[in-house]
Length: 336
Image (cartoon, rainbow, N blue to C red; front, side, top):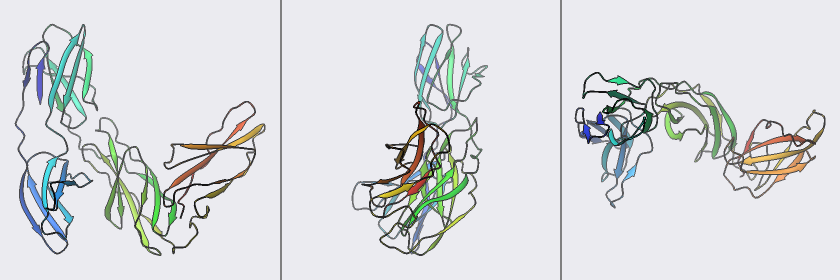
């Protein structure tokens, strides 16, 4: 926790942060097990296999002070660090009746506190702050300010509607309705994807879809997702979705088309005065990258698609006044 007086040197308050110290590390035939103390969660784990000076970071946040990882290399080295630095106030300045604060470290959400005498009668600014800066009204000629992290122990809401968007023999595209980290939370960091009960990928916010690859043909998998906030709190996992990959072939397996192109068809709009249709597609749902005006046609072939990459398609109609409709239901396709 840090404090500073407007117009005076910055001063530091609070207890020192205990350094991280690894308590134990052991291995068996397939895994390595670590335990440590100090710092504060969430943590990041890094590994060096002893062949170079480059450290590789595990992609997922760790919210406890223990970790188990797959490891078959007996020469690996591990180190643990906190995801966030201790709070450090970097700027305090005044501009007439406005005070400006900037800081580094800690973890959101933050609270700004103010008083007229050091360490006496601190008053909290009522709103939570998710960024690392603050601008507000200042009163008096000499005021003290400090920043603290607001404890966040509430997990985001449960993600809903996990569904299969497209599939090939070795990969699937899944989508869902994201969890929500309600105020005064630390904000949604992303979602964890589980396959057969094992964490396989962390999907950063605001994305709510994923391409999962390196699957086995003609094999069943069960998927679920959870929501993760910026303080490391994780929601429960969604209801499971079971899918079975098809046999590999030269044709696409989701019924949309084959090769490096896809043919789309749709029913004409029942609205009067329709002048034409626009096809929209991209590699991410909800983010139109390409579009084609097909005029009054209700079928189109889109070529030059990259094999193995997901594509999301929707259609809009427009009338003779140039008014465009809302997008149609989105469909996905993975070119083989």
